[in-house]
Length: 255
Image (tube, rainbow, N blue to C red; front, side, top):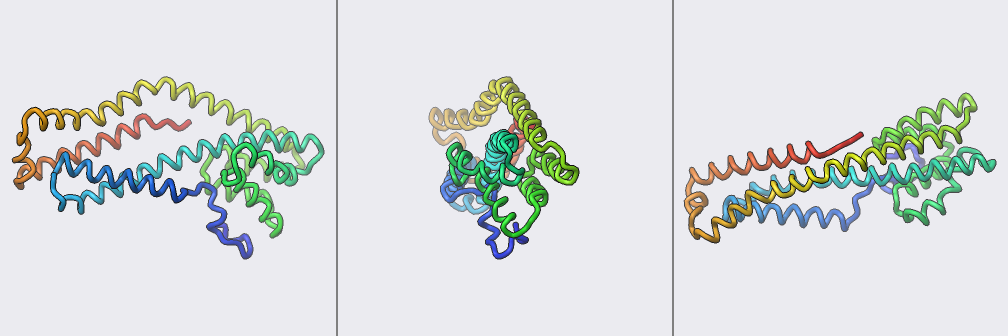
């Protein structure tokens, strides 16, 4: 990933790592989903094999959602870094030293394993290997795919070449992020009712099936033990998964 950092292990500089604990949790959730769907749609141990594909799809979907949350956290951390580095520049630090000297404060705020601390460590290693900060910021923006960092990297390179006011650029970048975060929070409040509706609608079919199974034992037996029933349940499962994916997409907001 960061192959032009001489002699450094690229995996050490993953900026949005998924921890072992997070991976285990995602795997456990995916396995539970497979068992859950098998019980309601097939009630057959053999169905677990093809349903593993659904489990993998769910794992990837949840992983993308997790990465999106990590990106939002990284953007918040980047905002704090911009404000702190701008203060450092006004105090007389060079742009590079303003970033590097922010490490202890960022570590105190977000922890040493946070994305912002990984960024600062990357900048430090890059300087030790004579890699321009502008190039490093471009790589950081490229990996994180955060618009504000990508734009900052472009402006940073131009400001370095033209001796522009980087402190002002940093403060402006922080202001943009603050405004964006506030806008997203307002939208999240407006969508909160829709999110609740989505969760209710996602579980409603299973509550209905469970109610019928309890009040009328054996009602669905023909669906689980005949070819036509299995085909019908497979179609129902496909429709449900499509509706679930669509609902997740509809309430996902990116400014």
